[in-house]
Amino acid sequence: SSSAASDTDYWLGEAYRRLEDETRALEHYRNFLSSVYDSQYRSHALLEAARLASRARLDGEALAYLDLRDEEFSNSVEGRAASLRIRATSYMRTGNLELARDAYARILTDPMDDAEKQAANLDIAMTWVGTESVAEALPYLQKALRGPDERIRADAMFTSGTIMLSQEDLRGAGLLKDFAAAFPSDSRREESLKTAIGAWQKTGESEKTLEALDILIQDFPYSGDHPSYLYLKGAVLLESGESSGALSAFGAILNTHPNSSLRSDALAKIASIY
Image (tube, rainbow, N blue to C red):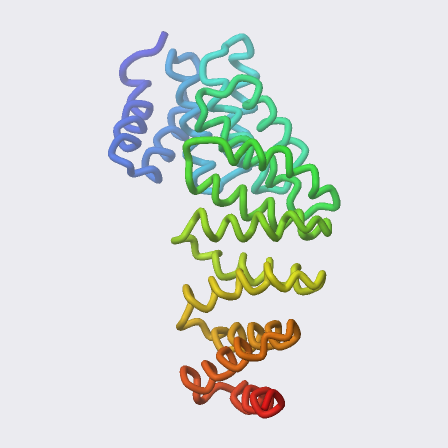
């Protein structure tokens, strides 16, 4: 047991946490944990201090609180899921990818709800991104596509398409085009379509290239790359023998982007058609 006086810092920490003053809350939890060792509130204080330290990106401190909690309350199951979530986040930020994967995998064995399951699938996938084993992320990203959070679905689809193309799997180009259609307000739409076009150009898939170019031309009229989209459309059409459509695309550069650096090239292409 503990006296009310000795628990003062705990209750101040709780009060500041509820007031969303996390800096002061963490300081009071620290004071409490460093001076009171037999309080009924110690387990909860260790968890809250870890959570606040992690949110402040004090990952070493957060992990130290969780280690201490596991040591002192090894038989307690209360707060175990929350502890795993904090561990996973801090491990990820400190580059301990194996430990992060293990924590996310343990979350996935018994997720709190569909939202947590979706988030953990995305998070565990991201531990593989940037590594030589990046393809290991794909099964988790596919699972992250199913869930209530639209932002996570968008991240999963965009990342899947990018990874697939890095593995020379052209299905990734189609996925990036689908991403652009599914998430019309996402800031990565233009990038996704450009990446898909680059992949289709390499394999000579002119029809798919033109479809994606038409979306770019229509949806991004003020993009600095808009003249190049028109020029590429004209070039692809010309190569396909569609001189009328090519003339229209090259002419659009002259009409809508008279100061473009591609103006002289467009004029040369028009002259070559005639």
